[in-house]
Figure 1 (cartoon, rainbow, N blue to C red):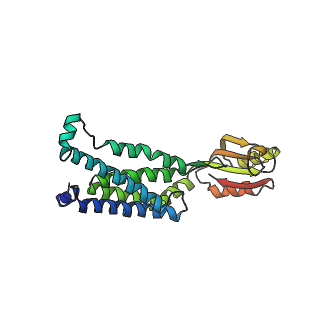
Figure 2: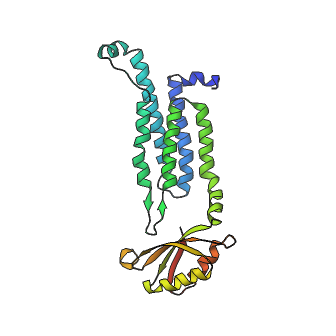
Figure 3: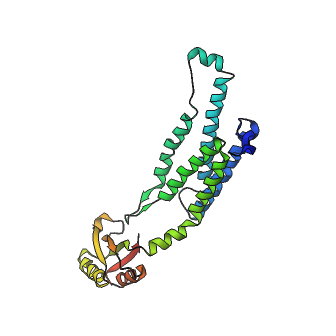
Length: 241
């Protein structure tokens, strides 16, 4: 550990101010990136999560210091002890309700919000590290978190666009059109290994839809298959999910 940070690890006014300020800055910067992408949790949400987690750990340390100094006589009389990790553990468990609120399943059977939920959980963990005064860990974790949410999406998109296994959502006019769609897909020499069909009465648009799970050829771009399906007169929309 870096000895230069030792005085900031103590429970003092300067240390508390630095930790809470650092939590607001780190949480805010992570949330700012998510806010630009119009995600459910943005600048203020990430900032408050990180700040709240930091405050929880500071309170754990405060209780421990008080019970071993000012309140030691009273604590010994009632046999009261404290575990400095208990509040922090509750933070990690309690953050689940926020993460659950950001995860949704769309009408196209597509799950959204997982990255936002994971970011909230990681932001809370970052706040715990800040509250504990583990500044070396904070610097490394913050840099890696920004790398994950800022730079890696481009790599992820490249991998998805060149993946052989894909899922395609297709909305069409009638269930009788399924034969034409299947023939079109097979004509592209694509293997279909699962089809999830929803009738028109089960969808918001009133038209039937289906999610096709397929395996592409190595050299065949996804756009070629999407274009072939969209050219069918009976197809209303087609999207990769």
